[in-house]
Image (tube, rainbow, N blue to C red):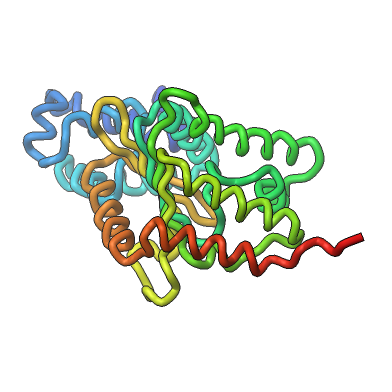
Length: 281
């Protein structure tokens, strides 16, 4: 009778198995995080976060680990499975929300919709309903999203916030003209606050580095910056320094092409004038 295979105690969930394998491989080499970082050239803190499950890292660092350990393509395969795990996105978003609440400054680029921190209730409701939310669940999601505005409404310590909006954001109205007017008015009022800067990237600027990706940058208390990228299908929290810096360079290049804050406010006000007024009774 053939001998039964021993089942390991390692997790079968990709999101948990990936950091387990990272810890196992490093421990087998008898290396510290600092020694591993010295060999591969990434920060020891990144490897620590990857092994704790706080972040997955990027494909470049995973490929480097695979090559160093001689395990290719094991780690990259586990990484791809973990990235595709639906629970990963929920965990990342929860962590992002915690970091957002603690951030000392924020700056964002929005491709086609108003940033969540600047959305009115009616705007958030229409956007979320298009995502399939209905009834009580829709109400809860709207409350959660618009509740984030409190971050910018704190009396003494609201963090500076810069919103870079593609012109398409202002050219894509809500179905309800009254609700759209309220949203534009809210943007105009926000643009006049000293702690909020709104700039519009005109369509005439052409294709840019973040053409299809919304991104929010958070400067944290320890001086580090993280990014959260999002498209229609998924979101990803990015903490690896090189990846965040690459996104920041693209953002800075787009900001240099954008209208000034004063010009942007003028455009918002012109758009507001173009919204049909309610018929008189």
